[in-house]
Image 1 (spheres, rainbow, N blue to C red):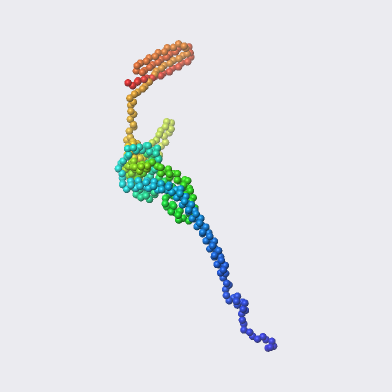
Image 2: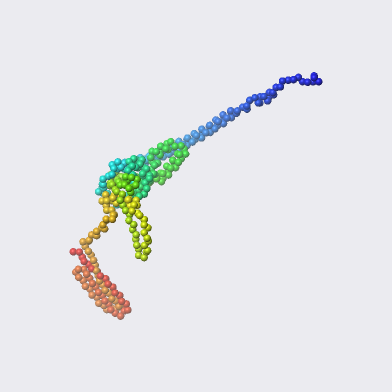
Length: 359
């Protein structure tokens, strides 16, 4: 039995199993490197194409802008500088003396094309302030009270932003997405805004109201009118915030008069605007409506021509009649005609005519 036993052998791990468990699985570096290179190539190709599209679109925008709008942008900048220069000089000189060009007629400005701006003295001291005031300009009653209709400078400043250097500077540095927006914006503005801007730059006069404060109802205002074609001052006047609106009620026969609404309009801003307009008209030598206004006198004519003719006619339908006529050298004529018969009808008429010829 002892001979049947196998000799003892030291325990050894299996060689194959030891090799499998001795090290971690190998990392597939070659696949990682290949994937990284592939992704990098794709990203690079995409970025290159985007860059190429960006520069192509940028070139198209800049070429179109400088080629088609280049001369127009210069005209816009020059006109804007001219307007702002007039306002800056007026604000710097303070309240003006009353002056009116002898040839100026406020009523005739209605037939011309003008521009209008109202701003505070603080805003009028810098070009940036003038631009802000123009973009924030709201409607008022000064032009209507003057009987003229100048165009607000608000649209000129708002619509003309794309003609300034800041717009083209953005186009030179924008990315593709922004360039696409700018391209659409440029096409829209050229079609929609450019004609109005061109019309504004053909204006004949400029009306500017410079307020001492933001509230023209509480402080004086200065009014200026310039001839934009020659850059010449036509009118300047220092105005006070005076004006009053009066309620008028009309009573018609057979119509019941409604009770008064009891609204206090004595402090209405429209009254102040009409008060400013009245002082502008007075400075220009034109009459303005007021409580002390007199009715225009009726000039008597040197010649009077009055014709009076008197005619009496009675008709009863027969062939017999009597007619009497009287004439004098003073131009008075009286005619009486009577016809009597067997008819059944009666007609009577009277007409008076007097003529006094002038010596």
